[in-house]
Image 1 (cartoon, helix red, strand yellow):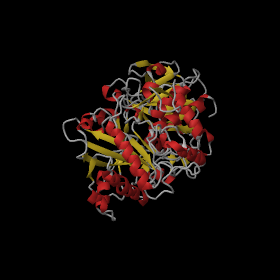
Image 2: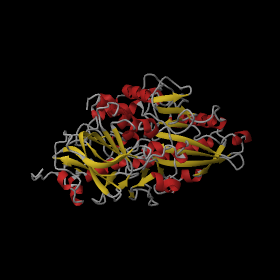
Image 3: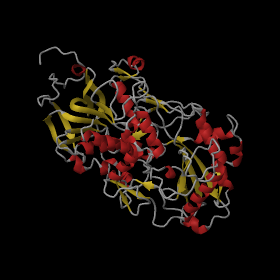
Length: 585
């Protein structure tokens, strides 16, 4: 105890005891631990070290915490900045939570960097969930598995077969229960995570018309068969491309939200003797002894607390995971030195390769052929059908399906939104995501102050192909829907005249730039791969250059998913949690 020690632990906190045998139960610290309902459990009690410390109780963090704590010998600590809001009506009710109305209570913010190639100098709100369950507690609930094409890319990029499409689908089925009649056999029956088809038992007729028209227009304009499909989550080549009437949602049987907090890190899970959950805790940095992660320093109510991990420190903070690694000394050495942070391992990939789905929307107004009974029945659905389309940047090989040709990958995700109250004129919104953008951005620290928000930018349209994708989408798909004789709506915004001005800097580019938003689907900033030459973690989430440190969240995706990112976030937490539980990591 009196021996001089020069390791990082002894410089981090006055609460740290100088016994560095992390396997010894004598190495303890005083902490205040709270369970999921916000009440304190064993406050100011002496605690042994934990086996696993999970930094972040979001989608993947809650999932992995539940799985590895199934072994009662694994002592698990979850540190979460937010609180539990499972029973809050705003969270519990189906639908996305509003940033503008509920920011202070449920969201956390990054600093904004001006987006490239957008004339209007657009700046996005870089917000994420600050509550238990993370994005799964506030998102729009669309359950979209990555396609077989994406999972094959994950295997290729990581060299790890655990990410193959067959294994991914098997794990999705294992973790879910489909409420109601499933559209195919690709769904679970006994998992903790709820899944169901949205809407009422009877499909709104205007949604059927929309899905049929979108199929017809896309097939004609893109030169490839874009059929009506029953289940876009089958993870087969045939389910990559197509239109449909109903979205699959993260929902319980009664239509309430199913999230990581109420499906995995439940009150029952937190009541396990080997699980502790600390709310309102801000993780400052990971602690190392040489290059081995041995614990974390976090702050709660102004008190700096040091806790230790015998086996692993798991970072599960989404877009903030890269920032925590950098604050802990893992990142580009020049950037770390500029922030006066000691370098533990030089890896310039930390915070790079950030990818996000951008969203553009076209508005259609009521046409003369729209029946009034359809207007009256349009209300009550969260969404109004949709489709997954291939790239609009080329004419595809054939307009007919062929068993001998490889189906095209997904590029565009079209979400239909009928708007009507039965009194005012009806509108139909087509919100469209570019699910495979080529532009990549970054996450960077503004200072070494852990309480200063990080700097992020998607670098939108830094690759010009992404802007061309949206321009071609408007010229082919949106204008095609306007001209389609079966779709009883007329294009209002942008007008056909705006779409026709597709010159550089013209009216169409101005419209896209002024109306663009984003989907909060950040991935890639801690991506998995084969080496630190181009990645942050290996195929099992283990951070390169150090030991006992993992990133388990969607930021570790080696390639952006071609759909909403909640499902792959659950998948990463579920698969890697099982790998840890089985002792393979």
